[in-house]
Image: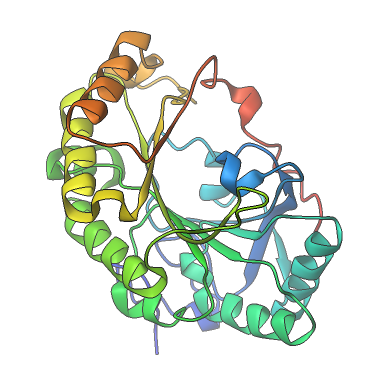
Length: 295
């Protein structure tokens, strides 16, 4: 059967080498696997999250911070067995968890790798780190394998999601995906000794320049849907990765006053369970080198 894993349903014959909308065929490709300190504190901990960055992406946001891998220009082809070994190696290095970044277009291969690694002694929580443009049917294949979901909710506006991600149905798709994630893992469970998240959901939202109004709709939806059952991560780290001649609003970083206004709004509607960013997080130095490390 041709590929219908993601909402694009591009129907590419990936098994026979045709690349899908994600830019990938059926070969499993990874761009980096290493301890990563730049996630939320309850994910990175003191030793780092065992983060595996997969090549390709089914969303292709124009402002992507990881464009080198989302566009598929970096990556090494490996087998699911090799991937299972990478998980175990990260565990041996002291990782807090195994963090799968942009994994949706490789779900079948990742399931094989996780099952193999767990049979061989993998015991760490598994984090599924996604832009949330995911089919519920595909996420259900992961039920029982994922402990922590780390999804984005990028937009409510279909106009913005069409403009920036070529996905006018983004909110409908992503909100349904997050609901399925919540069904699977439920309310947060913490390690009381370390402060690490063992199970649950943190929903990320990246504030974009001049898009405060839509960001307020995002956090309002999340809070009134889930209350304190999910944590929010409100990010100010948007960094222009190229010059946008047709989208000039994306040619600057977020102003402090924009971000502070969003945080004030979160507080005004009652949000308490949220991570916020302080200082100069909007920097290319926070983007890891995609150098095939650890593969």
